[in-house]
Length: 156
Image 1 (tube, one colour):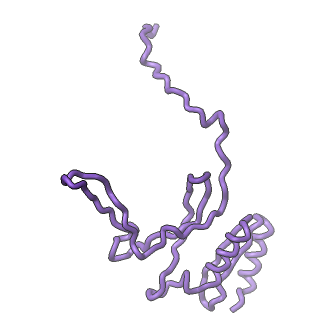
Image 2 (cartoon, one colour):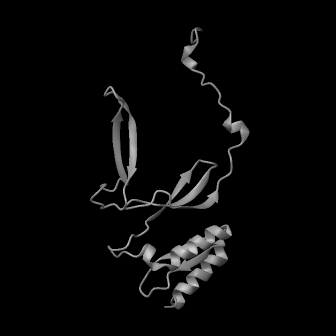
Image 3 (cartoon, one colour):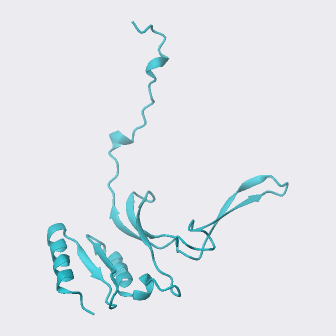
């Protein structure tokens, strides 16, 4: 099904004013549309696949739906990333995305915590949207905090 004239006009307006492109799902009745700007060809290909494959974002309970959010990543460099989120009403994890398991050493002492992700989401599903600039060097320098009340001089 082709988008309506009003939807195509809004896509054209968004493209002209902000330089974005809009991808729509071709399935009748599906309201999914993704707007993007300045992507690499591989990221654009991934988003086209996500927008046009209705099984990835359909609300039907038998299929796994992708619930997207924008998140800031710091490694290997600062970026904004489009990631999948856990299902909020998942009976297995309660919307947290997994479970923490404490484990101990051979003497029974606490040794750490392991994270086991739930099957309601894919924590490795991420697309880089925008690479953020590095902070200037003069902002990265750590300066020791000076306590104004630590002086031995009287206040007068």
